[in-house]
Image (tube, one colour):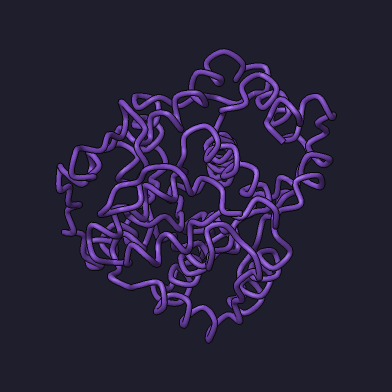
Length: 328
């Protein structure tokens, strides 16, 4: 059974009808497709080279701080900073207990082959926050909550290490659209509301735009993928050949490498909203001709019965009633 297959979706992309954020007209086109939104592709690799030049250190200390999850994009970003741009990065991995074994193996292979230092933080401190959030609001989007936790840690550790350049493996689809489309609001607003109310209890800050701009003046956050015009197959070929990277056997979306908690996050988002942030990213990829609609639908198909939710719930510590409240 593919979850959410009965939802009306845009005939051009793959976004569902979810008024007032995403609305389909009589022709079956969503509000984003009707806007014919196009991202500006004016970023050049030469611009990136000029930016990072200002962060090179003569004392051979760390030039940059690279967040690496073991997925294709973050692994490629790490490879680029060391081999393509000849910088001295410190790799950072945040493991909240749900990091896929293959992803961890990918990171270890990369740091050993590249010969760089690695800061690996495995913690159980995220679990109480996660359990509390899910029992307070079953529609909270876990991926955003985790990302904010991760960014909090990254800012603090980079500051502690006196590193002013923070590198992520973000694509343009993952970064620019979050500020430009209303489709993100139902996914993000419950998380922000939760943090405003309970963030201090878990020492997790909510960074509004003003605070982020201030922090970005202190620590620049950027991604080499914004400046390199490479498709997915080219990136995978490079890291497979150079770093022995392997894709996880199972993932959501298909052909990606995400943490095991991502299954629960995506399942709950599909139940609550009918889509995830992956749908938003791929919808723009369809509009720009980067991926076909049929291929996107294939990657985004969610088969609930193939996921071992009990193991995920057991790790979080949810009892039978709490699992039932989440619709499981």
